[in-house]
Image (cartoon, rainbow, N blue to C red):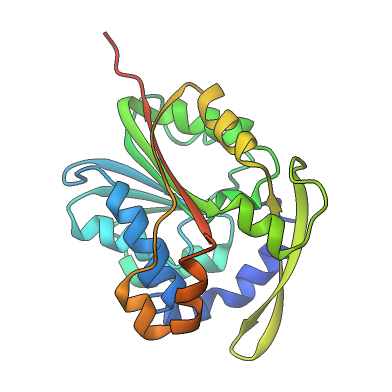
Length: 240
């Protein structure tokens, strides 16, 4: 998510669209969100970092469940969209996950959630180390990313084991928007999590929901055979 990347400009351009439409977009509302929510621990009374908050859907949901939220995004306009949604109920910070999260203290957070954001980072070493640092002992990391099988096959890459930059054209209100992100093998995803000191609790490759079937029946059939996203829940070890 370096600020010179195509993706920052793209997300600045898409910010209003995200706020207005992402709540009901089938891949978000009926596929990604149910899976992520199924991995969350109890959040009432907990401190949560929403890392890559986009237009603030998760921040709003977490606040509604009684959590205290710090929402981060590298796009100033996405932060503004989140502010429109949650007002002053959360702490909002424009922050690049490629950089240290110095404004968050050690062992201060119960949960880090990151929805479809980490594939914009080339190197996960720092971000996983920072997530581990800010989490309390026993705290959880829950995140979703592009599934490595999906990126490898859809973009017809030759070497599965590479971590490489991809570029895609997204149709946003009938306008083509270029977005860049990184694909990496499953081994690279899991190694980054485990080498940072996390304990893997669950790896999820979910089926689409009935609501998704009603909204996009052809895509539903595809998701029954080919995964789109990968979901991880990991935990920081408790102190003895």
